[in-house]
Each structure stands twice: as structure tokens, then as C-alpha cells.
Image (cartoon, rainbow, N blue to C red; front, side):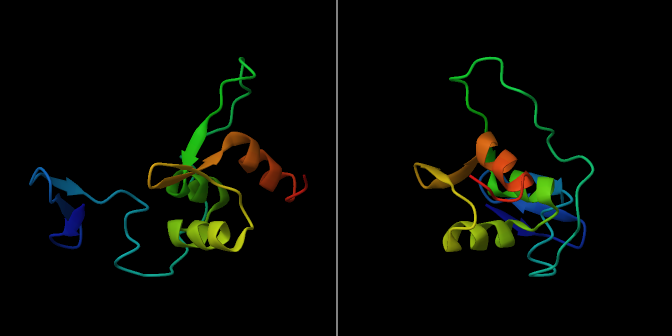
Length: 106
């Protein structure tokens, strides 16, 4: 878990290391803010193995769609986006991201 130390850094509570905020770690400073699309968002690439499935965190998927992690959680909670739970974490499959990019069909 991270806690803010000032306007530009967080402290990792597990290791004590002080780290700079990343672009989408500002949710606690401006709750509900939409930072817009991230030009450094992960790009989708065709899978070479049909059994290989790529998973994206809600934060990574939010970067692809220009939404906050909070919005992605809301979409998952309301069924707008299908998620896969692995342990306590929720992930969005590459196929689901492609479905949403096509307009949510399928």
C-alpha cells in the first residue's frame, strides 16, 4: 500500500521506499477525476497461441479507454465490463477489451 508524502511522492508502506506518483496514481488527490486517454497505455497485440490469454488490471484497462480505475470498477460492478477474478484481484481479458472497443457487442 502507498501513502502520500507530498504532492509528488508516495511511500510504500511495505518497504518504506519513497517513489514518485505515476500518472494514474493521483486518484486520491482528485477523486473521480478523469485524466483522459493515456498515450502510453498498453497496446493490444494479436495472440499467437489461441490458449494464451492476456489479462489487464482495471487500472491498465482504464488507461486504454481513458477512464479512471474507479470508473472501471464501477463498469465491472454494474456488468458493463466482464472481469475475471484471480484471488481477490479482478482482471479484464484482452478479448473483453476488444469487445468493448467494437462497441460492446458480443
